[in-house]
Amino acid sequence: MLSPANTSGRPGKKLLTWGIVAVVLLALIVPGCSNYNNMNKMSKDVDAAWAQVQVQYQRRSDLIPNLVNSVKGYTAHESGTLEAVTNARAGLLSAENEAEQASVQQAPRDQEQLQNYLAAQDKVKGAMSLYINAVHEAYPELKANTLFQELNVQLEGTENRIATERGRYSEIVNKYNVKVSSFPGVIYAKLFGFSERPQFQASEAAQSAPVVDFSVAQ
Image 1 (cartoon, rainbow, N blue to C red):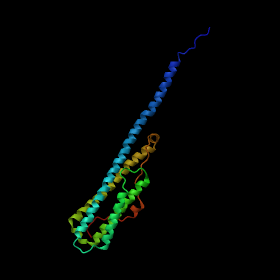
Image 2 (tube, rainbow, N blue to C red):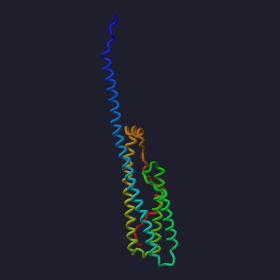
Image 3 (tube, helix red, strand yellow):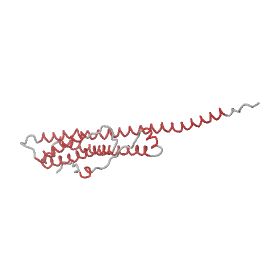
């Protein structure tokens, strides 16, 4: 008579197998959740930093019409405006219009999009420099105008704020990019759809654009 097969060890093997599976899953899920949360937070930090860059560029954009109108008001008594000032003003308004069309509301996802936006903003800065310098040369007595002086001070402060926020944005993007491109974060980044964000790079327009001189002393 055959003796029954010994099956006393099978439940233990199954439990061991499931135990190993559970440990492996925990080893993947726990750091996966942590990495996702960190990347998600850092991604939102990038978006928030970009929003601050946008705020300062918008502040400059809002000041430009006031600057132009202050000059118009000062020279309203004249029969005509000097050609250099007229051309510079037209160039400034045209550059500002192009910048509005190139506006990026959310943090750029690729380098080309960012560079197009920066090129438009650099063009505004260069056109603003030409306009202010043309006004200084045409109307040196305008340096005594309080409104014009105040607008120059505000524009200078805005340029400083833009530089500050761009620097802060670059730092945050760099930390985020390191996170999503380094091991083991790169694995979870691909799994959850996180990718590197573009960084600020000096454009050719920025390298050749005139320096904005806000000083009214001639």
